[in-house]
Image 1: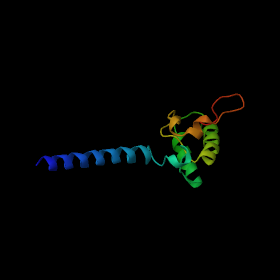
Image 2: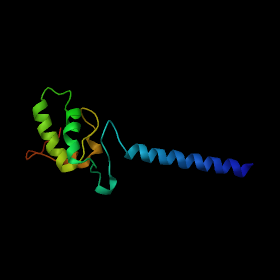
Image 3: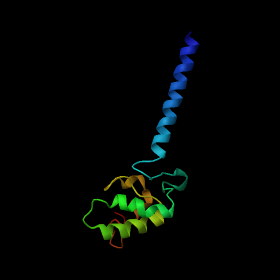
Image 4: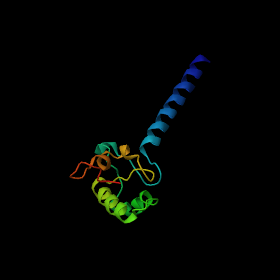
Length: 107
């Protein structure tokens, strides 16, 4: 009886841990994918960049500029952060690419 409870608890812990790993690595808000084997860069395909940048830039008043830089960043980093603003920490390449002046390159 005690052994059965111990096995059941162990199985639940393993299932919970695997669900947390899958949830953290699979997707957030559409097509964003994190590929830790590429040092946090995304695993988007280049052809997915326009649709992801349309999503990312969907609520800005500077849509043309946003789309230009987002697509440039996506082609380089193969990642577009989830949401319309912020969340760049999930795409280190996207987050860390800076302008000559030191400001953020990617929206």
